[in-house]
Structure formats: structure tokens, C-alpha cells
Length: 435
Image 1 (cartoon, rainbow, N blue to C red):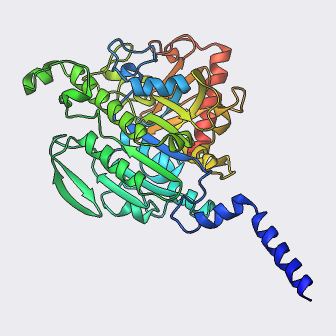
Image 2: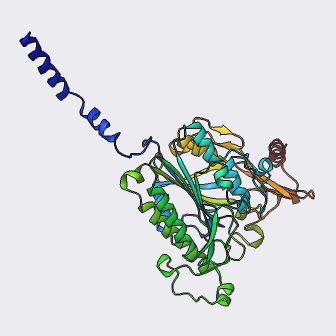
Image 3: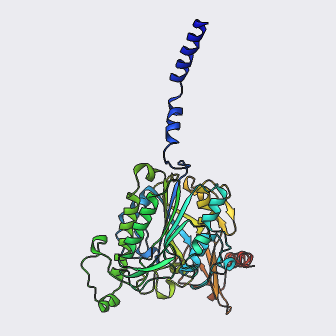
């Protein structure tokens, strides 16, 4: 009996000592506050306000480029997209991203239109399909409804920023936090970055962080000198109004500096587990637009200078590094693409077609058409041709392969068979979208 007892005791000790070290660590980890689903990638979406390709490095449009080393680093390690379409102004673009729907399906087509809180936001969509695996926040510009609580009502975990389209002063502006508005005197781009960093640091599970900077939207101003490289510019308003471009660039460079600070606030491990998306919301304002765009073809128009914006994506899962991508992409497509990043399998929903496969495969399936609209007009394009139709019956057709900046309206001449067929196909597709 004593021998049997001793043998049992020795076996118990041996089995305990041979147990898996990882199992022991797992038990220890359960006792501390650690990230949930840490293998899921974090997502940082940065939206720059009123930025087409003419002021952004690595695009051929424009002459005076903002110095944006942090964005350039993302370009070097990721994909620069050439043919991304948004809306001509900010509200419908933001609504299209958050819902995956064109404005004719949400009612948000122009500035001031209000989104319905019954829409399923991308944040709620992700939460519903991942068992609430992600924390979400929006910092900065909302501008798709007047109620400061609508972001949370639509499923965003936390919102802080402004509800309007802009501010009167970047150094004194109404910051909304926890539904309460109070004047903040920190430089706006810096404060929004501070808030994003603090929120991110407090998260215990993967996060989807949407930072909607107001910069470089008007009012044109001089950003803090330590945030830009435009030199010692005058702060006299008359001087600014006479030549606003360097001030616009200073605000854009400040955005890049602060975006870099946000990225560098991550640990190496966190950064390696993050995907970063940078996009402009619409074209450059006419006061600072650069050739080949002009005031008539800038922000607010359906021409390329109004709706064709920069987009760069880099980070976890983006294996095509330092490349350009010419695929046609709508701002709506971020909905399912970001869904795919979080593990949701659906690749097409509403007006959103995922381009997630392009992160790794240059030959992935691509859109045939992209679409945009205003209250009194719409536009649609395929790989070669672009068609614009106004409510008064005016039509425009351009061959973007030979006339990239829409200088020659083909409607004014006799259309070839190819041009006629293209116009017919574009109208047919637009009719499906609009009905």
C-alpha cells in the first residue's frame, strides 16, 4: 500500500512538471488585462479635408507639393491609388464611407443633408459581424447630421470633434466631447491627434480609429511653425488672402506631422498589427487649386479635380509595396474592404465592392464603373470614358485615356461607334444605379 502511494505521488509530481509551459503562461495571462482577439488588425483611417492630388506628393498633378514624409513613407511601403472617386463635397463622401451607399440611397448628396441614424454604419456592421471584436472611435469632422449624439447612436463607440463642416479659427474652436461642446484653444490638428492617441492607448481589444482632420479646409491659416516647412510666413489676413497656397500647404504638412506622431505613438508590435488608410474627401478648393485643374474643375465640380482624390494604403496585409494601382474605386468601397480587413467575408454589399484582394494581388477582380453625383447632375466612368449628365439635359463625354483632364467634350463632335457604344453603356449603368 505504501509503495503504491509513493508511486502515485511521484507520477503526480512528474505530470505537473511536464505540463505545457504555454498552458501555464495562458493561466497567468488570464489574470491580467490583455487585448482581445489580438491577431485581428487595427485599422487607422485618416481623412484629409479638401485635398485632391495636386498638392500631394507622388502624384503628377500640381507643381507646389506639400512636404509629407510620413505619407511618403506609407506610399513607399504600400499602394498609391490613382483612380479613387469620392463626391465633390465632403458630407456625401463621409456618408458614402460610413454606409457603403451612394447618396441617392442615403439622401446625403450635398452639404447639409442629414443622414438617417437607421443606416447601418461601418462600425456597427463590423460589430455585428465580429461579435463586437473591435473598439471604434471617430475624432474630428462628422458633418453628416446636426445631432452630436448621432455617431454613437449609429454604433460608434466614441466620438469627439466637430459636427459642422469647418471652424472659424483653428486656434479657437468648439470641441464636442461626451456630447458637450466647449471652446478649445489648442491647434485643432494637434488636439485631434492628442485625443486619438489617448483613446488608442486605452483600448484593450483591436480598434478601428477614424481620424477626420479638418485640415487643410478653410480658413486658410498658418499652422504652428514646428509642424510645417513653408517658412516664416506672415499671419496678416490680407497677405493670406492674396496668396493662400503656402498656408494651405502648411496646414497639410501639419496634418502629416501629426499623423506621423499618431503612428509613432504605437509600439512596434501594435504598428506591425495595423493597416493605415489615407484618403482625401473631395477636390481642392478653387482658391488654391493647381494645374491641370482649375477653379471650374475643382472642389464642388464633377470633373476630375472635384472627385478624383488621393488614397494610400499601407500596413499589415498589404504585400504590394511601393506600387501604383489604377483600379477604379469608389469611396463606398471602403465599407466592405474594411469589413474584409476585420474578417467579415462579404465582398459586395449595397454600393460597396471590396478591393481587399488588391492588397496582395494586382490581378484581382476590379470595378468596371465608378459613380458620383450632385443635386443637379451625375457622372460615371469606366476604364476609358467618362460621362456627365445635368438635370437640364446637358451632356458631356470624355476619353480619359487621351484627355485625362476633360478639355474636349466629345458630345460637341460626331461620335465614333466606340464612343457611342461607351456612352450608351455608361448611361445604362447609371440608370441602374439611380433607379
